Length: 264
Image (tube, rainbow, N blue to C red; front, side, top):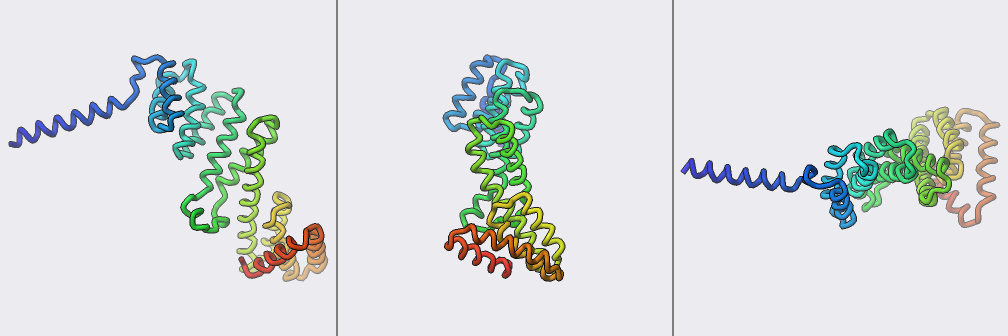
């Protein structure tokens, strides 16, 4: 009985091993052209994991073949679509190092911006409208740098228009984070730190709502430190912002200012 059981186990294990090996692409007996065509077919059909398996095998076995650069580009896209964002960024950095003058460099930079931006998102928290503005903006900062570089270095690229829209979103994301820090310092009476933080916001994000809200924190900080002249200057800046707004926006702006005092 034991012998029969062992035999059955051996047969099952052999079947599993055969199944595993058969799922791997046969790169030795198939041409690069056929392999790449199959990988692209799988990618276009939405079979991302299958495509990645083939592309990774090609990348490993034909590192200097005629399709090597295109395989690397396809891997970037496949990793991004599969949600393996760190691997996508690693593949992008590798491609940039190996192919710094490639004609599709603008697309590669664009994909790095998309990948970093996606890593800053949290889908589940987004569903429940959770305020994530106080989270570490490491990936948002990286994406902002990527899109800024794309816009400045490749102004005629077809990806610039979308990158500019994403820069507006990211700028607001980063300025909201800085506002949270300024609010944190305000609650603890660290008024010099508040002033320094808002000054940075005025330099990097002067046209965001968060920076306009932060002006009130700066005015309050100067006032607490007894710096009358500086308090008046910030008051003038606040007033100048209000005068340039429609009445409805002024009311909304003042309402947000009130929430800043309350730490909202």
